[in-house]
Image: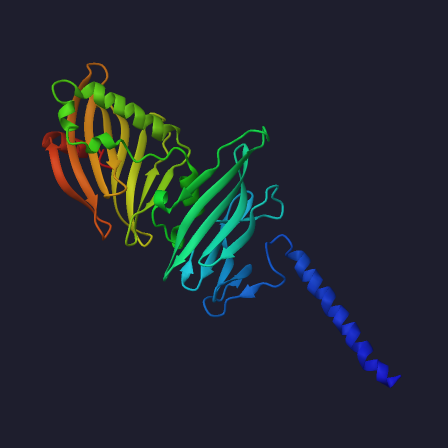
Amino acid sequence: MKTLLIPLIFIIISCSNGRKKEEILSKNSNLPTSNNIKTDTTTTKKKAIREWTFNNQKIYLFPSEKTDDFYNYGYIKIKNHESGKFIRIAKEDSPYSGFEKIAIKYPYFTIEQAYRERDFTNYEYITFKQEGQSIYLHKYAVNYTSTQDLEEDIPELRIDRKTIGNIEIQNITSDLLYSLRSKNYFVGDSILASANYFNSLKNGKGYPVLKKQNEEYLKKYSLTENNELFLSLEKGVSIKLIKEKQKDKNVVKVNLFTFINNKKTDSIQFYRNIPQSEMGLYNCMSYFNTKTGKIWQIKYFHSNNDKNVNIISYTEKSISSDGSIKSDSIHYLDESLDVKLDELNLYY
């Protein structure tokens, strides 16, 4: 009998530990986790929800404080690279699914996750590529399914680096992905940069030309659901076009902000449509050339009653490597009207 006592005690202890382990896992069953929460002891003291092997490195998925009605948002970390908060971790009571998996084929890895947006249930593929010491967004794809008509054939979204430029992993957020899949982002009318543009506004031709242009700007920025557009340039420089929320639908304000390594550096007004009783309507229209980093801009007052236009300025600016916005050329400036802008607090 004595020889059977020790194994019997061992079996009882083992079963007891197994039950405790099952209880712990059941409480965390709503998380996309492996059997145990991992800790990245070399890079952070936070507890990771899950980890994967990426060549000779580890990809860690961490939770964050960001949340909405259906999801908690997580971020990933690979050595010194930490992404923004874009991974949807479905809440326990959420009717929608979120993060599914990471597919790895070095130097690429793809995050797959679902989300609900208006009347569509969608599945997105977010592919990254490691190049030397940097990790870039390589491709972004979304498959759309209508909840109203499951048979509806909806074109898929496919974007690669030729389209979106070099966006590093630390800049990837849920807002940025929203801007990438938005069909309404608009960086202005390229005709502003044409050599003959200002001459086309002379001899009484300014009003119909500017009126038609502004109608297009107003349509683009009024109807867009996306209030923010992110664009990565080069050497850590990026811009955001942000539309301010207004109570009056006739007032539209869009600002351009520059960032260096995610720190705000400079800003200018990019588009304005503001009624002003004293000087008529005030408009500012800009065009941003994503390849050269140049900004072409025209500001003017006008009246729809007498179809008169008073041009304030027509300028050319550029974004420098330190993120500052510099004036390259002032092609036209009415100093008295420019002072009026300041008096009417229309500079901001």
